[in-house]
Length: 105
Image (tube, rainbow, N blue to C red; front, side, top):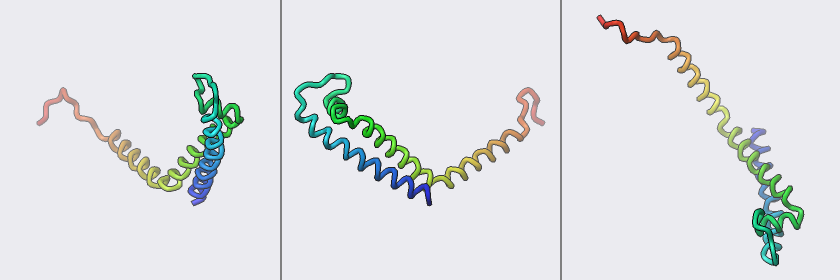
């Protein structure tokens, strides 16, 4: 349950930070007179406003929040599935193999 709460908070905070950086940069990008091609118009606006670090941090927060939410919601099911797959794999490794060269009686 804690993973779900922390994941939700990270996701929400990341989205708020993303919007808080993106909206002013987009407003500035619409009024830019010139920009360089590699970062583009929005990248240049992000660099001018000093928001590129916050922009990348918000994306990392969103990804971590989604991963924590998924881990909190489906962690037990995935762990159970892995245990069952390992059990089946171990059972198949211990079965005797049939030699193809020997004739069947």
